[in-house]
Image (cartoon, rainbow, N blue to C red; front, side):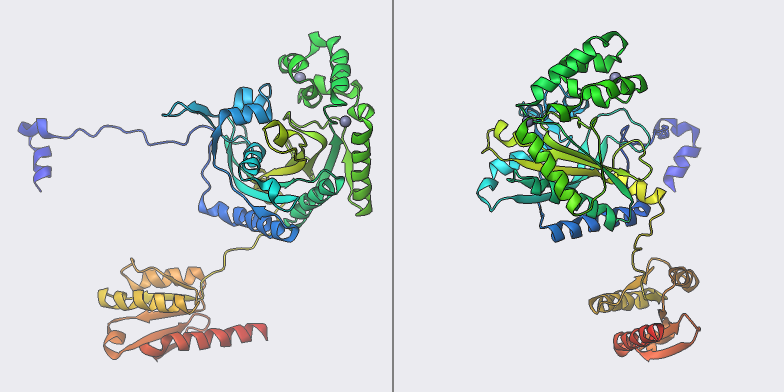
Length: 448
Ligand SMILES: [Zn+2]
Ligand SMILES: [Zn+2]
C-alpha cells in the first residue's frame, strides 16, 4: 500500500504523519457514568417510584435542567451553601444568568405559578425523577450530577398532607425492601422562628470563639444551620442549645401535634429530632428525613413543608410539602443490604445462521418472532456457527434456530432443544407457529 511505502521511505519524511500521543477524554470531576450493569438497580428504583406515584395519585411533571439563577437565589435563599457555593451558574450567549437546577422544588414552584396550577383541583400532587447538579466537594458516593426522585403536595395546609407524604415516603422504601427510620421536627413559621433564631444566636454568641469557620458565618447568616453542623465539637454544643419545639407559636404547635397524632394512628414509628432543620430557607413547620437502618452518612430521603415559597415567588398563597430522595444513595443502600432485584428477562430463542443469504432470511425471521412477542437473541455479525452457539449456551435460551446452506435450499430450519440437544427439521414457513407451540408446552412443563 502506498502509505506503507511512504513511511518506509526516508526521502518521504515530510509526508509521514507523526502519531501524536493523545490523552483520552475523561469524566468531569465529580460526575459518573451509569453503565449497563448498574441499570437493573436503577430501573428497579425508577419503576417502584412510578408505581408508588400511581397508587398515591401523584402525576409526573418535569421541569428543565436550566432555570434563571434568580429563581434559586429567591427560592432557596442567597445565604445558603447551595446558592453561595454549589450552583453551576453561567451567563449564556443572550446574557441571561442561568443555573443548573440544584434541587427540584424551586423549579416546580415556578411551574406551578407559570401554568396556573392553583386553578386545578387542590391539592396538586406531582412527582419528578431526574438529574440535579451541585458543585460539592467530591467524596465517596456523592456526585456533582446526581439523580433525585421528588414528590410534592401543593395547595394543602393541613397536617393530613404532611402525614400522607411521609407515608408515601415510607411506602416507597417498603417497596424497595429497605429498612428505614423516620426523623421528624418542626421548624416553625415566620411568626415563631425569629424569636427562636434570636435565642439560638444568644446561646451561640458566647461560644463564638470555639465554633468552626462555617458556623461562625452561620451565626449571623443562617443560625438554624448551626444545629446540623457535622463537626463533632459543634454537635456537642448543639445538644445544650435551645430547642425549636419550645418556641413554636400556637398554630405551628397545633399543626405538629396533629401530624404526630395521625402518624401514631397508623402506628408509624418515628423519632423526634430537635436538631433536624434542613439546609434550605424556604422550609416551614414540618421537616423530616428518612434514614437507612444503619444510618450511614446521609439520609436516603428528606423533605418538608414550604408554605410561603410560592407566594414569595409571586404566586397565589399556596401551602405545600415535598420530599426528595437520592437515587445514587438508594442504589448503594440496595447493594449494601443485598436486596434481590428483578433481573431483565432472558430471551427464549437464539437465532443462528450460516452465510449471507441465510443471514438475510434470519434478519426477516427475527422481526417475525419479535412481532409475535417471542423474546429472541441473535449474533448476526458473527460468521461461524460455533461462536453463535456458544452465545446461545451462555444466554441459556430454550431453543436455538439454525439456518444453514442445506436448510436454505430445502426451505427448512433446524429447531434445537437446548435442554436435551434434540434437533428437528421444521418447514421454514411454519417455524414461528412451531416455536410458539414448543414454548407454550415448555411453560406448561415448568408449571407442572
Ligand atoms: Zn409558627
Ligand atoms: Zn460547625
